[in-house]
Image (cartoon, rainbow, N blue to C red; front, side, top):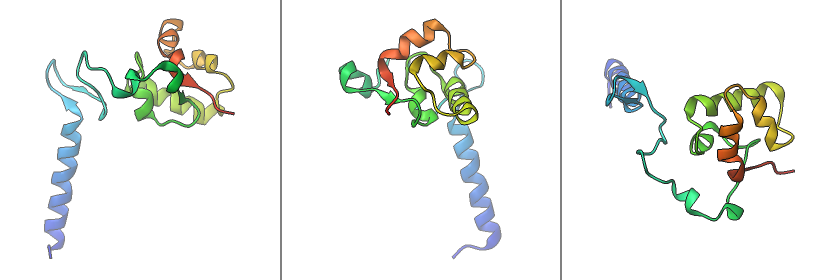
Length: 117
């Protein structure tokens, strides 16, 4: 249907669109998460009672971690990399050993995380 050069051009254009969809230009150029929410917006999953919703920090990907309060895409990826390097977390407090997870950040997310046996 398309020539090889047309397919290549289409691939390049789609790649450029995807890259620019992750860039926010409101206050200079900065990367944003593909799942980031507008300021003041509350993710639907946080409207559930805390007892009903907890994510397993040993199985989630960075996109789910990014939804937690105080955790952005960089910190979410850092948590995943730490887990892949050091093995699964044994208790939720082990997150405090990840660079940039301070007690303040941990206190914001501890009611949303768990470790399933």
